[in-house]
Image (cartoon, rainbow, N blue to C red):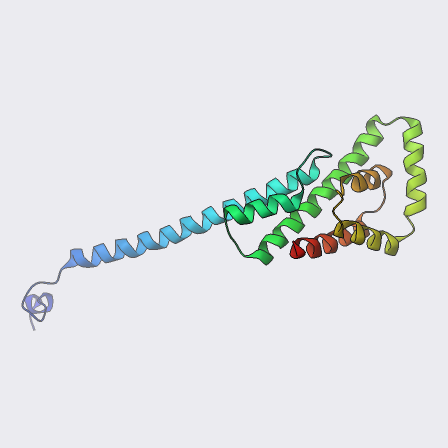
Length: 178
């Protein structure tokens, strides 16, 4: 068998190397397109998470999280359970940041009278972890904004673990119901 025979196809024509190169380029282009789409989707999810986080850090005059989540779902339909998880994690993280920021502001700029009031609140609520969990859970199920609750708890320096857990569970149930 000669070299020429190896290059010759069944119909007597030479093997078309350009055809394989075009196919490879098409496969690579399709692969890169999928990567680009995945990165674009990831950027959208990160943007949505940051927007929800930001509106939960704002102490007042922010739209309700459920309204923003609904807008995201209408604008870009996506898996509902994932969107709820995204919203709940971002809003819980935002409320945590709001509470910690409130504590910082009170300690740095608050009057002595205000600090004593916050200390009294901490002493009254700090020892009731189960009650904090259930109170926050029930509060999160309702339509009332929770920013004042987290501002007060953060300003008083109350341990937030139980409140955040109650908020997470309550908002998850609330968002799933909406």
